[in-house]
Length: 163
Image (cartoon, rainbow, N blue to C red; front, side):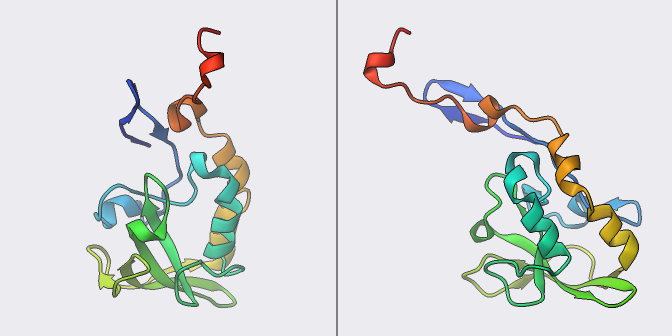
């Protein structure tokens, strides 16, 4: 979970971002890659795009803004936009394995750079990998979410004041 502070007019909001992290060999990817306020795309406020994230992680869909065969693992915790920067990896799916390699920091407009974190490949059993991602939408939908804290209050027109 990530929590931030947003000043919305005269009101301060404290939105919480509940998401699933990738844990590999008992270590969180957020701990491996220390590039800032990052989350995965399996984030409750972005529920409508969770299916796209799963399709990208299983190479059924290209990740917009990245070269073919690359996927965003961790993205900006505020908006999820590649333009803020993301930890990306080359992904290869074989008959029995899924492999993440060549970890980079990419933002879509400057040259990709190396990241602080693992330098070696991460290889997963394909059926286990796909099994973890299967049902991700339902699992993310079950995470706590407060739309008012996340999106703020809606503005009122002058004739609505005092109602």
